[in-house]
Length: 186
Image (cartoon, rainbow, N blue to C red; front, side, top):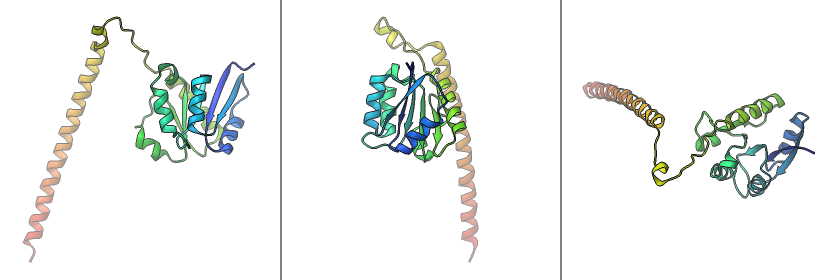
């Protein structure tokens, strides 16, 4: 009896079958869903070992499924491979580099699929563990490591802003020069 379940959520039967055929022989069962609602319900009920999720789906988009999964710690730690024929639609909603899931652009080959699955499994282990809180004080506690990280981020952002301001000032100067040159022409 299979010990692992792989859930393939895609509105295209061809893609679902193709993914199923590309997977290596193993001790797992492939579950299929043709829309986001069916897929999300299977995620909740079956707790698969891997989710292959199309970004554009009927009834409930892959984006909406992804957001719902992220709300629950036991679901968001499931390795996830997001699939789409249009990467730009994914990047509109989720910034690269993708930290907790893998992305594969359709159409893909078996080697690319297997690499994406390995990548998704490694990234899923990076999810932070939920913090245990025993009082209201601990709930609002920010660790020294978090504070240092935030301070470094602020310093980096200030440096970037300073560099951008320098670029803006240079562009303004160049624009004034162009305008001055145009005003001198008869």
